[in-house]
Length: 164
Image (cartoon, rainbow, N blue to C red; front, top):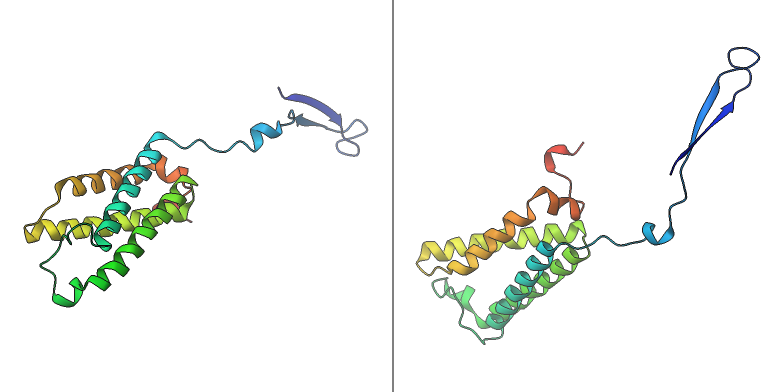
C-alpha cells in the first residue's frame, strides 16, 4: 500500500513555501520481481507442432520418408541437397521453438518466416496437384495464432505500424 507524505519546501512562495507531495511505494519483493513470465498454452501448442514438423522434415532429409515434390527440376531433387537443406531447416525450426519458449522476439520472427515459407511451399504443392492439406491447415493456424497481438506482445515484437 502506498503512503503519501507532505514535505514542506523552503524558499518558494514565502516563508512557509509550497509543500511537495512525495508518494512512497512499498518495496517490491524479490520473488515477484524475478518471477518469469508464464508461457501460454498456445505457445506450447505451436512449439509442439513446429517440433513435429521439424521431425517430419528431418525424416525426409535422411530418406525415411519420400520427397514430397518430385516435380521439381532435377538438380533440386539431389538427395545430398535435400539432406543438407532439410536438416538445416529442421535445425532452424528447433531454434525457432527455443526462441518462442524463451519468449524472445527473434524466435517469433524466425518461426513466422519459416511458417511463411512453409505456406508458400504448401501452396506450390497444392497448385502442382500434390496437396498436403493437414500441413497447410496447421501452418495457417500457426500463422494466425502467432500474428495475434497477444502472441506478438509475449515475444515483445512491436506492431510494424506502431513503431516510431
